[in-house]
Length: 320
Image (cartoon, rainbow, N blue to C red; front, side):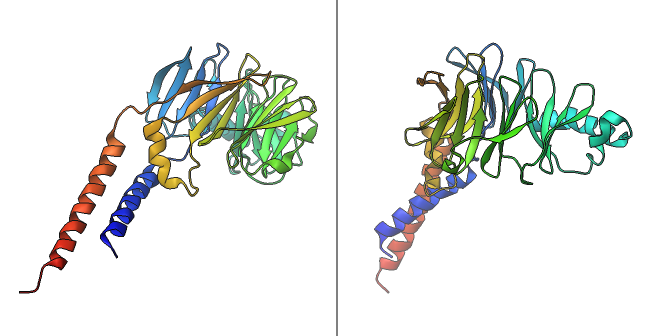
């Protein structure tokens, strides 16, 4: 192997090593009633809050995909599930003789898929293809059934009290009255990363694999490709009738995985506001707060090159 090829291989391996340490792109983003955007940065493990274009690091050391709003504060779904849902469900399962708690039988042992928390404090989740709702008074109510028995990957609450759930890479709508329907154009999705309904007539769906944001207004649907190298990872509905997209540079886990470190270096993630009229603008981009990752990469690559150069020089010496 030539020295040039060896150097190139070493640099690529160093970049790949850094990329392997980079976290997956999170999907946690919510917008509170004051219009503040909360989102999770799973590269730096930081919970951010955006206010008028300014970023506030609310908490560090947070690594999660899901956010929920409790009042006007955001917490991870894991925190809410462990701190609130699980004790309630255990109590419900222990006392399933009450008529209003008939659906609670066996909940403590069954795997639950938490979906969303609405403004009334109702927690929505999926159990064996059924959408259930846990009320603040510890009652379980069935909202809908007939979904495929797969784990949901995303969910969004509708402005009219409905619920949109992504199961089996299809977007299912559960009306406030309990009826189930499917969103049109489901064949266009490859990997749905978010769904949000900011109003009764607007629905947004993000496809992480294709880098597309689908906007449905009434019976009309349109798709807008996010400019390379960005990919939409999460989606939230705002009180202003707009959708807010959490987007990351490059597609993690794909052919460009070795570029993941550059995503962190050059600025990622970002939040875009998608207006109901079709306008789109970037609200904020998380910039690199340090140079540790690129410096480690350079030192590792430089050290490897030095070792290779010394070995090549030793081999080139004439035999005594």
